Length: 282
Image 1 (tube, helix red, strand yellow):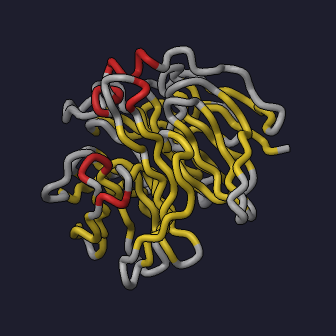
Image 2 (cartoon, rainbow, N blue to C red):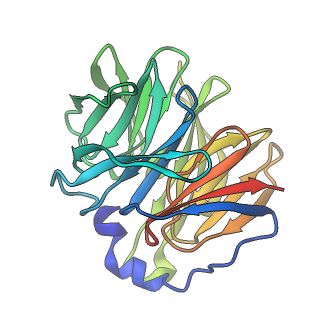
């Protein structure tokens, strides 16, 4: 993320905790990845799809790839799709995988792995993707404070607003978009401001705060009645109940990126460790 989100900021946080909380149990851990940023559950094919940045998070270098992993943690194909740039978040809609890739949306056929590209004019750091019930997908552009809407093979600006809080993770949930903000980076750790959650009404585009200063948020999923987010720098997996109560489920170390879920378990990409972890909530 942005040259792995500023060497100075990263250096300030290298002592992030590495132990696993009692709230979640580690079922397995898979190696063989390269800067994995995102995991998505492919229900139709009963597998996980992982995006690998491999090079720099901001460079169109053709090094990025997608890997497929079985639900028991076995690697299926480490190089299922190659030739991407710096692929990050993804979502499945209509038999296609939509992948955020700097200033492009890669549309991957789940059956063949064939890739089409939708260019997003003006985009600088496309980061996460969610599928709405209106047939569109929505994509965050973190450092531009934007959300794009992709429909009928084209992308258009949906919303630009500083109140999005450097939007990273995004989830279509209960008829709205829930956005996980990354917060504000700074040269000094004490000047950095953690991000929170906001809800965006799709019809009116009104932004409603949900939770403030939760962490430097990356991925977001729903598991049961709770929203679950990942804190990239803090290395935490955090559950947020409907009443706003926050519970740390696990602490996995810095680089805890864009999580996925099958509805019960949580799949966590660990960018610095080149692994994906399956967590089962106790």
